[in-house]
Image (cartoon, rainbow, N blue to C red):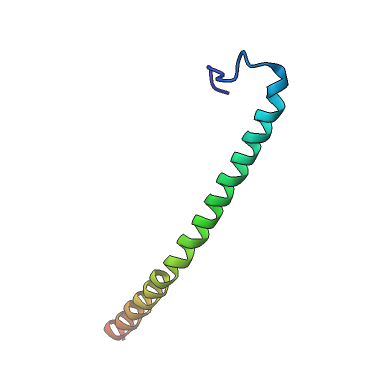
Length: 67
């Protein structure tokens, strides 16, 4: 936990509301991370296909060199 609590000194009556806001903020941020991760994975699909093709090309060339 951080050394300075920015909520220290607030009335106890406000704490449940702030707790709820923090939980909602965390939920939104986790959704953003999830959607960005999915978008990144989708955008990399083409790169992975090219990588597989390059590895296959290398394997084909090496088999001709060795064989």
